[in-house]
Length: 387
Image (cartoon, rainbow, N blue to C red; front, side, top):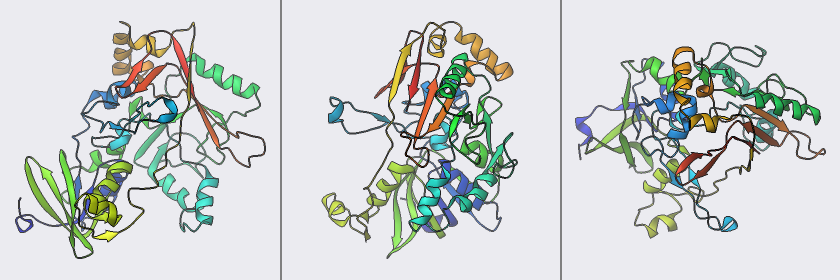
């Protein structure tokens, strides 16, 4: 191992260059007095599978870009094992996700504040949302116009998106021009993290514009093995990089932003977690914290796919016409290659007595299976509705 005296110390060491890690490293390094190290286990986000939105089918389940976590077999579905995508690349999940941009419902933030999460009310977080985005449209009172993250409406939508919107309106759901504005309820065209038809990840927003700052150092293909401690104080981390193990020091803070799975894993490998669980694996406890590695919650998504007569994108992907669509994207940033998953989205109340919307539905102009192998498009024309 390379000893820490051989290396300079940083003020902040950020572990994980996902959405949070990119934002933190970019923002902290705005102050030239802060020396910041950003550590990412994956590589740079050069792959076209990241930047061409429809190429998500090649990004998810790709071990060069995705950790490809597998969930435990589900006994309620005959032991089915689900793929749990997690970005393993600069930008993290924002480099391989479906790009749908949803701030969240104001009443959810207010509920957190009411339960004691000071600073998390809708009014508290609104300035942060505005500061982070550039959105061409919407009410400037609630939408940002000059932030680092570009948000736009989908550039090329499938005709069946309008059918979905018309059907929702016939059922009494109002057309909402901006579900990220003052009111979330209604049916809408999707807002996506794209700029002129190209994915715009957290890395594009916060790291690429500032990557040459003298006070920001970025390590890619660098795996954090565990945190380092002086007593109860975290002083740095041990990182595997280029075949060597390096101990890096942090004068002020080590920030763990490695995602919902890898962050608690790193904490537990470092001795932070339930002492009994750590002892079973021969890990000396630094802090006996029973909540670490527990209480994970994820929302379920049910999907229904239906065969249709109209050509859909899963057929286009599997036909020679894909060359034309790629050319359209390269020259004009238009057409099916700009497609995220949803082409229409609705927020509504599952029952009339609900005070606020509690359900989200989406329509995608293609159908696919989602398994351990990743995303596999159907061969016949079909659409999918997800709730």
